[in-house]
Image (tube, rainbow, N blue to C red):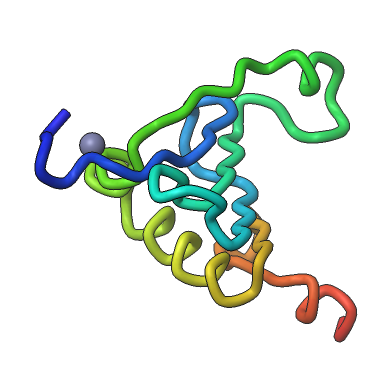
Length: 101
Ligand SMILES: [Zn+2]
């Protein structure tokens, strides 16, 4: 952890890349980044998903350790509140994209 840049925390579920789903809500405290990131350990409809440990991770470190896919997802989530990863098209999609198709 780097004291100068480590401040805001994201909630992270699982740790196996790629990230599958990211949501964002306006932060409620100066230490909150507003992000919740789900990695691909388990999908939401798989058994055990609800038991996955949720851990706070510094947003800065999350971005540093993540790749471009994660960075782009975080940007999009901030704009659209919620994005999901489509492994077939290798693209993030939003709720708006979903209803259009
Ligand atoms: Zn950090």
